[in-house]
Amino acid sequence: MRKAVAILLLFSATTAYSAMHDPVAARHGVVASTSGIASQVGVDIMKKGGNAVDAAIATALAMAVTWPAAGNLGGGGFMLIRMADGTSEAIDYRERAPLAASRDMYLDANGKVIKGASTDGYKAIGVPGTVAGLMLVHKRHGKLKWSELVEPARKLAAEGFVVSPFLDGVFHDKETLKKLDPWPESRRIFLRDGHFYTMGERFKQPELAATLARIQTNPRDFYEGVTAKRIVSDMHAHGGLITMQDLREYKPVIRTPLRGSYRGHDFIVMPPPSSGGIAIIEMLRMLEKYDVASTGWQSARYLHLLTEVMRRAFADRAEFLGDPDFVKLPVNALTSNGFAEERRKTIDLTHASKSSEIRAGDPASFEGSDTTHFSVVDGDGNMVSNTYTLNDWFGAGVTAKDTGILLNDEMDDFTSQPGVPNVYQLIQSEKNAIAPKKRPLSSMVPLIMLQDGKPWLAVGAAGGPRIISTVLEIVLAEVDFHVSIQEAVDAGRIHHQWMPDTIFWEPNGTNPDSRAALEAMGHKFAEKPFEHISDANAVMIDPKTGLRYGGADPRRSGVAVGW
Ligand code: GLY
Image 1: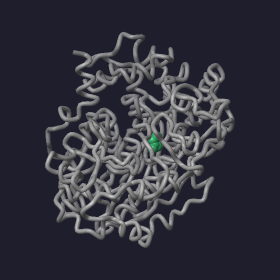
Image 2: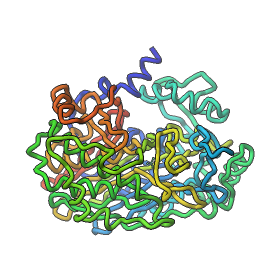
Image 3: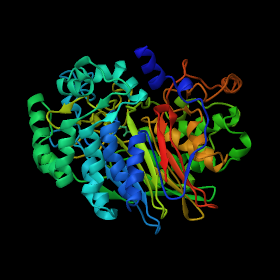
Image 4: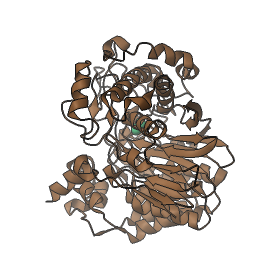
């Protein structure tokens, strides 16, 4: 029975999200996230007079308590903000490589990649950016006091919250056990030393509550105070690389969002070190030249077009991208009309291209898929699109002693060795090689789209490279097919990432007729469906009525809350 719950809730998309329902509608504001409790926290903050940024900060902190597999203090991410006055910015609070990190740190004496070294345990951990990122956006845009925004998360950790059927499944899942069991602090807190939490029980995290209380009084505590010292002492005890200097010197970066437009809708999207913004612009530029709407949503012709543009954008992603503060990237060229047109011209509307002929050589990427995205809109029309992550499911699996903080394994997003796939089949170029203080390339791609210059859609997703295809599919569902935001989020997904030359598909992402038509064109499908390609949460404003809508992803029991 317990196993059945885990399988149903975590991996069996067909059963878990087949029901179609209306999006949440509200007059003032909406938060859509993977945690209903955290979405409610965000809305409560807006009710108290906070804006969308305040709500996003409180939601992010609450998710560090209520969605431990991906919500975090010990990871990093990207927050895209568009204020109602038209200003926008992209906050990069991605983790950085520690000062002691080096290009070949995951290779053995024979130059071979050491299995698991970049994904499990202390050497996999990048310097966390989440707390610094949230502090920065609060300083720039917050209306309420920082301590008010931390309080709901602190309370949830101290008093506990009721374990949902979904979280019950997560705690009992074998991947969770594999990740957390080797680490006594994680095993004690999240697995209750084998006496797993079940739905209806209250899950308290006293060490995390105490950490949040310290951060509530002084957010720099994470980087310089008691919390920092505890993280570093745990690192020393287990061979981790992060030092007090690493923490003290961590800095989030304010970046200028990339801009694009699709059929008259301007949009802003995350720039590098996200690879996703460039890929989305490139794919939409190619697609704009086709009458996508006339293909029919989810038809074979539509899926063929999607596959072909994804194939090309992912080939470029693998070759050209890395941290812009360390390597020169051809961003202007990759996002130009001319480049997209060159790529588009090679698309045959009746036959699948061969990935090996699109660009010779390199296989492509899989990435860890345990990221989480939430979207927020407030009564003034401020929008926030935030994706943050521990990288893998429960990050490195490690919880720093006496802090309750789960730590990321973001170092795995670097190129461990150019040309050699890591544990997630991730192959990238030298541009993404490890260097001290460098940020690994990411697929996270928060996006905000406008209609007639006014905020319209905020969207993003979890799922490694599948984030990019998911965001594309939701944008197309809205712009070309005009479905409700919930329908766009619910709809079955496909994904192609150039290499392997395979269409990944959810059970309701295609049907036997479409599949047969696509196979006749030369496409290859993964033998088994991908039960859960990604996890997306989006909000929209109806330009006619001003109503706010939220679409939360049922694949991970997401909940949109409005008021
Ligand atoms: N760790 C997943 C990503 O940043 O793409």
